Length: 493
Image (tube, rainbow, N blue to C red):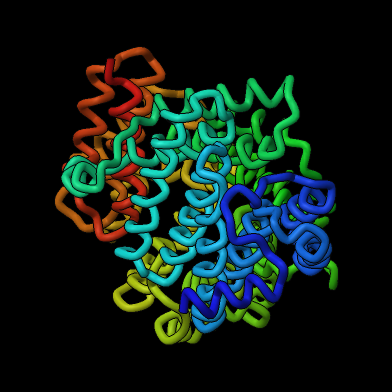
């Protein structure tokens, strides 16, 4: 195989000696990279081909080309396509390994390709192979940092890894130790902040990537919704011309109580033959409209199910159609949609697992509590409170509904910054719900910790976060535990 590859390289007039290879973000490569971040993948490939034909020894072309495969796999979720494109990875790694060992781009580009393929593998539950990719990437980046401490791009990737490694639960730290992975959330966030600060006064091609990742980490790990929104909005990418920018801004808007803004962004999402299809945006618009209790929310879930051929969020889309039926059609189609929820899609992500559990075992959501829940999730706090104001926990016959009532009211009061009342409702939720399989008590403990943290009481906050980690609900456990772990790490001195 080595001789075959060598012959091919000779025919293509590509250098074989490491000294002949180089790394240049030429105008063609830069343009391709910008087009990729706008999901104009075919145009990007055209620019890369021009560069490869003209300058076949420029390794930056092959590195940037890997972004095209990554986004194609990550968005399409087509396993056969994934296995086919995997052949490109081996070829690119082979080329990148021929690069100049004395360049900071040598290990950086190799590491980035491994990281992108790690994320792609997770989509198809190739978790062991993904872990190996992460280990390789981490080792390359750590060595690169030692050899080239002033190479800013390296700190961008290491910062992301260090922050994520910091969220690994205690019972899995042994695996991270065996793999040689070290890092904390604070360390990672500090590194990313340094990169962003550098990019403000220096030309830095990865500025947008860094800002987006920092914003997402601030949102999900840093308990800083306002800062996350401000950071994401500071990015230069235009949501009217980039589906990825639309996705990022709308995602953060939906998580920070700016649902109307998310709907505006998603309704004006860029579409057409120039862009790689990103059907998930239809699903997001369906969710945002359901949060606002818009009757046409079902149109977007149905469009997503019609057009998307991947595996994730299929079950949840059917679940949300069942909820829509409860709210607007007296539940006449609830059973039919839940039957499809059980039969179609995969149960890999937490949202699909939760949808499948509801479809299999119930219970059917109480319409009033469902309206309060959706309104709260959309940031419509007064509307959510109005749904519950005339009720008490005893207004509901089912134990689950009674516990959910306390939990929902606690969440609403928390967002309204009525912290003492919120804590009373969270305490009742924990007392009544700890021994049940639902997630209410676990998240109530997490949210109690966040209140104590905001009030400057780290001891009480850590106690609440540990209480969260002691519970093992059937739903959302991984994400709740990750946030609790992140909270503990933030407060450790």
